[in-house]
Every structure is written in C-alpha cells, then in structure tokens.
View 1: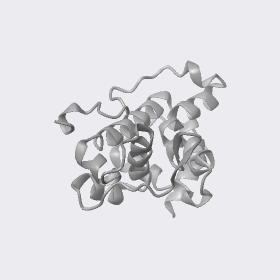
View 2: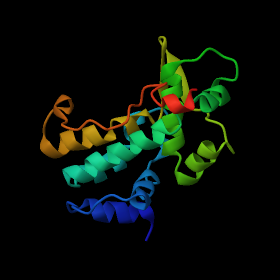
View 3: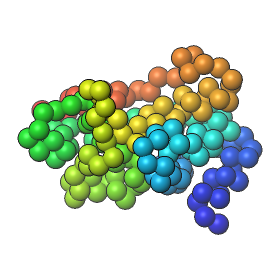
View 4: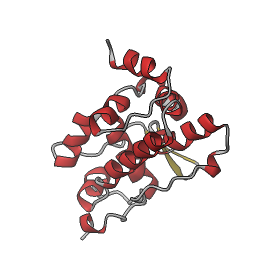
Length: 173
C-alpha cells in the first residue's frame, strides 16, 4: 500500500498513537509538491490527516517540525543559501522549511552539508519572502483548529524551540 493511501486510511479514524520520527517522515512524504505556489494546497493532505489525530499527536508533529527547522538555523546553512547576498530572515525560514518538506533523505543531506539549502520555490512578493512549503509551519495549528472547530489563534500549544533565525545560538558562534 502506498504511503499516501496508508495515510488516508489512518486519517479516517482518530488516532491516539504516539508520533515517532519514522511516522513523522511518512507524513512529510505525503506533501504534494505538485501544487506549485499554493502553500495551503501543498500541505492539505497532511492537515487532513492531523485533524483526525489526538491533540498530543498534533502537538508532537509541530514539535518535530520545529526541531528539524531549528537544527538548520546556523551560519553554515545561511551562507550556503545566500552565498554573499543580503540575509533575509523570511527567506531563510522558508528554505529551512522546504528542506524538511522535501523528506528525510533531503533533510539529512542538508543537515550533513552534502547539500545546500535551496532558494528554489521561494519568491519575494511586495517585500516579503514566501515558500510553497511554508504551510508546514502552521499545519498543526490549522489541523487542531479544524478538528475543534475553533480559531487558530486559540491553538493551545507552544513548541519548545523557536523558528526565528539566530535562535540556535550554538550554530551561529
């Protein structure tokens, strides 16, 4: 059974199982990169799955997203992306998000330095940077909101790691 079909099958009933890293990457593999510039559509299957999961599972997903993005918050990664161009915090966040959204193998190659962060599919519009996989950052809150029929602003979870650039001080020294 394909990963997407398995995810669809699992999303048809609420799950209370815990989220491990293998399951996290299986969910990430369901991101549909073919939707081009529509960030919401790219992660729609992921949000549909998460909304049928227990709150702790949703929170764990967000924590892992933040952990993996945080792990790429460092000088080496920024220099690889910007190569002498001016640093843009939003572009850096979008590139780190995209590295996670591309899957475990891609992410680990960036993390190990075998591959650089890419600015592909990240665009500037009216002075702000946007990436097609930026919706990954809000997927957990969106899923929780849909599950509880409540506003995203009432999402009750704050991940332990920040997504802001320069938060991982150890990698900027």
